[in-house]
Image 1 (cartoon, each protein chain N blue to C red):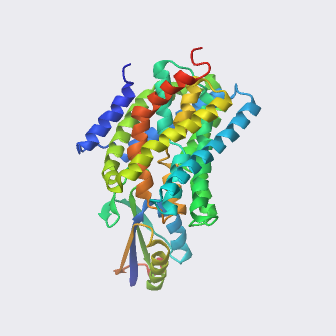
Image 2: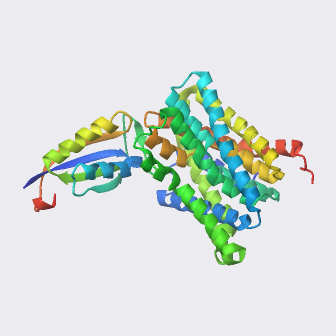
Length: 97
Length: 315
């Protein structure tokens, strides 16, 4: 069964707000890991307060992924370091997502 | 006069960072050190607070909250008059400079203890009061009454941030347990205070060095502001200390608080509430320029000035 895996890489300080956003748009769960890297907004390195990045992964229905992506694009892209990508994944328990 | 060894640790970190050493304390260690410092400062303040009349303490706390706003407004006015930065950046930087750095405060405390000068320990309570008002002021100056993300999540960020929780929590523990009760944990929090501070400053030196790269990119104006603003803040602190009748040691602490700029609470809150402000500008000014300036030059300088002019400095 196919579901969509949406991956968001963004500033650690947004964590709580994004969790709320994701839930509002109907995702049933998410996974967050610490991340670091470099992009158009410079090197983002963890270690000092909330200067690092986080990587949020959400497995959900395609329509939910689209909704979340549009919301994030509208509300965060302009001012925050954020990238987002998605692809189809195979899951064994589609009812869970 | 010889240099307090904790300052040498800061210089070591700074030098290692500038020479691109791979030295870094693990993030969890930095986190633990800052927790220990915040709790130790809070508890010291709490223990001292029981001896202070409530009315005097309350009126001083109100005065100090006003001081935070005055310092922040002075920074904002200076930046607006210079016409170099957009209003949101000016407001965000003003919030950083009106708010305070607990790390800088800890260095001033260590400096006084190194010199054997007494001070009013309950000033730790001022640190908590100084953190918040300027942040709220900066948000209002940038966005009026409409912070991004809304007030509830912002209030949570500002009032439940780690520095406010640990300082206030430590203070309550200090008040409830009292000096006798805290004897058992004194070796970790009070006896080891300078050792913890030394390690913390080593890491701060490394972080400041990392921030110096972007500092050069932001140009001379920001650099000049980050050097001049602490002097103005220290003057404001001195005026308030004089009005409150603090001892020379206490006056140094209040000057240092006025001169210091936040790099923990303010960046997190401003990033959330004023996302259009460039976080690089304020953090670079506060971490790469103002923090090292205060630690290396400011604190001894402010104390010299206080010694020269304070009414009962000789007593």
